[in-house]
Image (tube, rainbow, N blue to C red; front, side, top):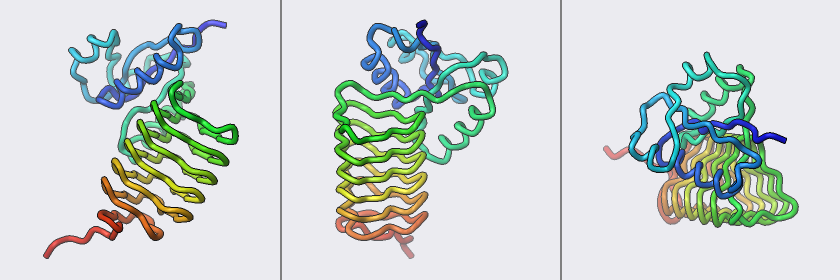
Length: 217
């Protein structure tokens, strides 16, 4: 079977990290034929060329001219990622799922299409991960966790067992969510925060313990 053509949408830092995940997971190019990066903002072409890649142009221009292709969206903002996914869903393109070979994935784990699992991630058992989710390096996801679509889990996040992370959440670097909690849709957990109670939808929480962020008078 011939390798399937694949593009990475987003050509910034995480886009380049995603290419590392792709190349590590498919070192011989037997599964994927990487075509290049697509992004609305022109990237630093020196960095792109240095890793042996090309920028193919903007999302709309690429979708107007492309054949059927596979894609992953390496854009950190969940809202932007969801809008991009909607555009691609209207085309003949299909989402790919990338998992770094140095990620530890338990036997009873489901990972949705379009998701990217980076190196040294640990995912244990009875874990359900939705579509277009980013799990950055060195994060841990405990037993019986449900992670909905378009969630961003930044590096070194620790999610304890029986946690529910709803659609479009962002968990900041080195944050932790304790056992049995729910983090509501569209919420943001700040870097280093420790969540000890449920977080409501659309809330931003910071600190130890995590508390809602309020504007200063």
